Image (cartoon, rainbow, N blue to C red; front, top):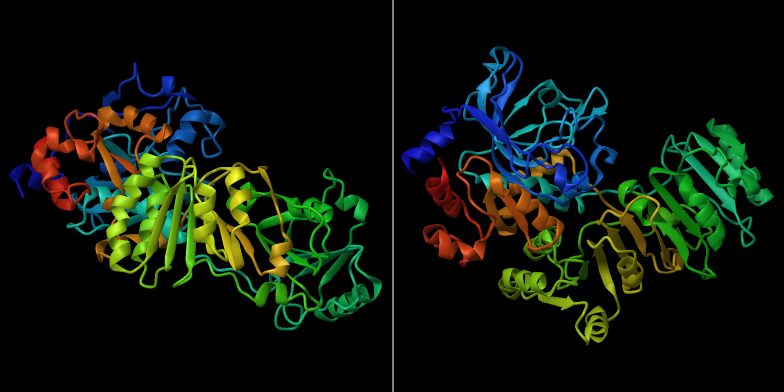
Length: 572
């Protein structure tokens, strides 16, 4: 390691000023000053604060959402003209200054990553949103991060871990969190359950579990439930101390009616109108259970935005035991070992991460299909993962949606259907079309974030006839981030493989635009501390920095050695 790099690692030499990219409102025209970063004075550090140096910052499409929305973004609640936002939540940082009351806990040179979703006294102060982010050289960390509602949001990083791979643990944590989710196998204990009868309901339904002394909701709501069934439920509720109320069908069908948010909504029959009317009443993490045998008369308009953001889940069963809709085939978020997985919209950075994880699983699927509308991105994905797939005797296929034989090839690969379909493209058409290829017992996981209120017609008959499940996922927890960093530092997963382009702080604007325009198949990483360096794809380094290019893995993948050589050359 060169003397310059050793000094950088020690973090004991501060510059005179602090360069950053302020965002003053919606639109790229409000990013920076005259299209350039701003030079500000070095921030002062209070007694219970830390001065931190941003070493690497990944660019996320969420950053583009803030640029597009400005103050209308749900995580921004201030006047951006007076208090501009500094983006960047995928960060690696080093302590560069320690307040006097923290001197025994932190030292200059300590390295961390940050769980971006920060809550302090119940308020969301996300890093790179309300707290100054990684599109700056230095920032101050205060009690919101060090003593937040979930404790300390800083996670220590080993000295040998790369800066880029540390920063990219954050988006990777969202990927691995997708497969860590667990789901209820009964009514929510202490929750609100609503049973809705239809013209096809009978008196034969019952709860085999989840509605007894061992566990039950706190409140039961009934609408048009057959009289004998309602009587049995009310008698059990009285014995268990469950509150019971009745809601007339006309109130259910009135979208303006003030109705309770329910953890479980159970529709007793194949009535698409009632399913659509009741679904908006689901609480966060709510489950819609459809009990029926006959097919629905038409597709149901499903709010896929809320499946994603509010974690709504659709399950079902034939009855008469309602509990079997939850427990006869518990939802498994993990990919099926030896099964068949389809990543829809796999061309972008998150798609590459999902596919890489699948290929590197200890017990991977036997077949992986990746589809997208961006041929150059699919080519890169195939080149990156084909060797790993061959070594593990896996079938990896990458299909461009615009190729003439796409439909025929999709049908050939699908066969009897996919065990898991992961939706990475924010496309209603993609969701609707992919649902038809789910195998019996299959799971569709809506990972891509469409806005709440986005409706997609889906044949929900399959949830009770074929045990198909529709679930969604968003964001990650601090435990997910810790797990991802552990896997990175143990060598089980490599975020470095996601890096496709690099640049200095001056290149951040170009990097953000490249992410907006889907230029690269992977991540753009900004190094805020280096000399001016344009946004550069890794394959172009051979012409500009050949000694860095020589340290890439297979001539195309970022490594810690390439990063060290890059910093040796580019640090001021």
